[in-house]
Figure: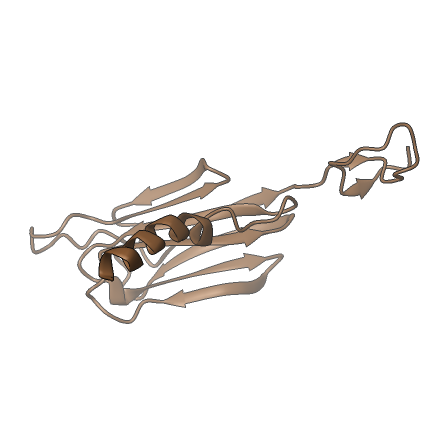
Length: 152
């Protein structure tokens, strides 16, 4: 019975975890490899200075973190915070590697930072998922991929 459940999960997980973004959205993947002090860290994503997503890590047992979020067109800011002020550079015990942060948008790397970045590091990015074209299905120049009418 357990093999059957495991097989079902292995078949379903890729469909549950990935590909959830609609055609007019982009997938942002946040990948964090923590140093020894993950509880010092938090991050936020803001759109036009409005916070839309925030995560506070409250334990030191985290080593790796990956999160995916679908975002529509807009101007975004990713900010990673460290309350101690040493970023991902806490290798003072020599038992842990320095951490790092990477962001990818629709599979393309857009940001990477590691080591001692202080109290915060951030990255701004723009998503423009607008496809101009004719939205009139009766017109000869109708564009089924368009999501913004260019009045053509």
